[in-house]
Amino acid sequence: MTAFTQLNFSESDVLSNIREENVIGSGGSGKVYRIHLGNGNASHDEERGIGGGDGRMVAVKRIWNSRKVEEKLDKEFESEVKVLGNIRHNNIVKLLCCISSQEAKLLVYEYMENGSLDRWLHHRDREGATAPLDWPIRLAIAVDAAKGLSYMHHDCAPPIVHRDVKSSNILLDPDFQAKIADFGLARILVKSGEPQSVSAIGGTFGYMAPG
Image (spheres, rainbow, N blue to C red):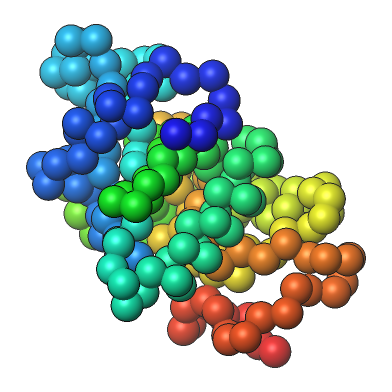
């Protein structure tokens, strides 16, 4: 396990909670788990919706371990660790640690209580949220996302290009502050304005910027 900040949990705490009942999402590269790393107060804290109140509720992204896609996902894993492990910004999701072995590749993040912007816009798996986001909140989310992207483009040295910005990769905390997530396709610019060579188009149809 490689830590990127001071942790109050161990590798075994994470691994022992990788169970199907904790799955909150899945995609082409693996599953995402919501894990409570508390001290026996999990049920009370979850009822209050604060996950222990001390950062002990975490999200764990588990990378599939298949020989057919191992090389591709290894690159995505390394990219996400390289990018998120070295940057800190209020509008970029915080990577707490990574766990890597021959059996598993795990990325452990701060838990974003309100899930993705995509779920709020399209009412996916969002029980009780019958009203859409109002326009002031939508504007604040757009500004937050822009701040995160501006930091990556102008304040990081070298600059970072996300390459897959979309509503499902914008996560929301309890106060609806937006943070950019999922840096598996990110590329670090070798020089300002000179991107690292890429062998294929990256991104999601409908969200890819025109060439």
